[in-house]
Image (cartoon, rainbow, N blue to C red):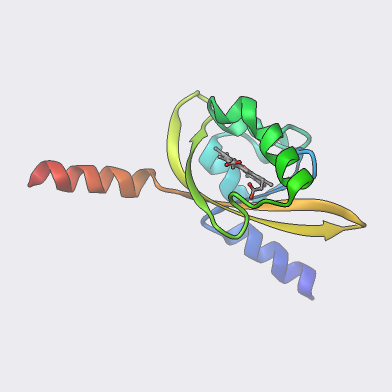
Length: 131
Ligand code: HEM
């Protein structure tokens, strides 16, 4: 059925896929999220998504979501942005973030798709230094 296909897609995705509720609380993550940030999959659930980012994002992120919900002004949804993520050990890495919005049981939720750019950035740097 469709649910099993969706499950297989999430399990095999290379990119990290995270869903949050309207207040930024994580409701699901796929296995790629666990690999990228170095936590077990169940350690994400129920935590505020801002634990995955360094300052100044960490302190500002609740406000970003609240601002979007109050004004409807999209800064990332449907646009995407290169931002910085934070792993379990505190190290940071460049990532591309895409966010979309959906409604479930009458409540707003968001899906974030994170593409790790650290390999790409390292290659670019090495190429520049070789010139
Ligand atoms: C907005 C950073 C992860 C959901 C934003 C903004 C930034 C940001 C900079 C826009 C602020 C503005 O210009 O007003 C980050 C960083 C992340 C991250 C550094 C690293 C982990 C996520 C994830 C989700 C998410 C995984 C969803 C699952 C949102 C939402 C908004 C937002 C809903 C408001 C809508 C919008 O501005 O279009 N975030 N974010 N964020 N983020 Fe995140």
